[in-house]
Length: 223
Image (tube, rainbow, N blue to C red):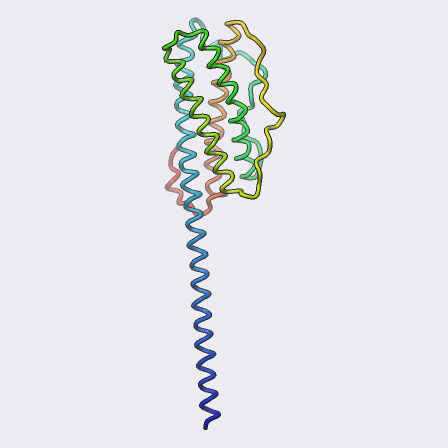
């Protein structure tokens, strides 16, 4: 009888331990899911803000191009259709999400000194209080903000993958130009930069399902 009671007591202990173990496993799994959901939501929010900023810079660059054409005098449309060598490529390269984000970052870095050069040239060609200079300065500052945001987002999502160095080293700027060449150069830089922002927006829309897998699609109805 005592042996039977001991066996029952031991069986109860085993069942209690098994129940407790299952409960602990469920807690661990639920905690893991909670952490993953929080991480995905943070990724979603970061990408959401990055997309909104990209859209804003795209809009302001469009306004800047209109003002640029207005400020250049005769035949502004012809200026923007000319061919200029040495302008960065507006296309986004890479197959993997990490490669695409790294390409966005590299292209923003490549365009930044060209935008600054356009501002410097137009400072000599425009009156001090020209709306064009204000818009140029604003877009340059926004580009810096967007570059930093892309950089931060990349390192959050891919903490173990360093950003590759800019291909070919530092950006090569054009040699001294006459006034007409400066006008052409500025317009081509701005219109090409706008194409880059358009391509960035398109690529960001595909990243939401590959980088932030559990982000609600409703959060990204921006474009």
